[in-house]
Image (tube, rainbow, N blue to C red; front, side, top):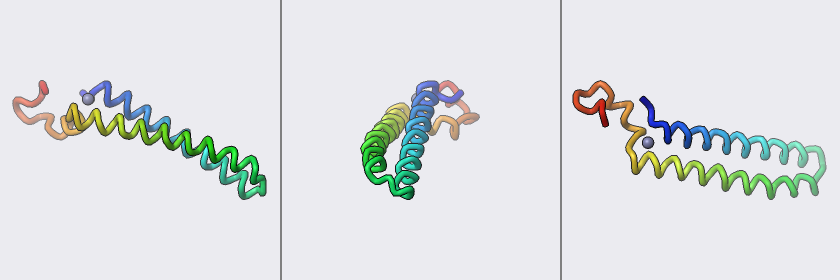
Length: 84
Ligand SMILES: [Zn+2]
């Protein structure tokens, strides 16, 4: 069984990265359309979304480092480690 907290953190990271990617796409489309002031306003939102994505990445990495649950899957089936 995969760690449920890791599942939650993976989902957060995916959602934050998707949100970031969407905002970058919108910002680029505005810039390419010559709508510079709107693009610059969107760029502020891109920065905030990047920070949210980065903090969710760090939360996931910290949890995996502390809990070692990203390695549990590789150890499954090894005798005596199933309960870890
Ligand atoms: Zn875990």
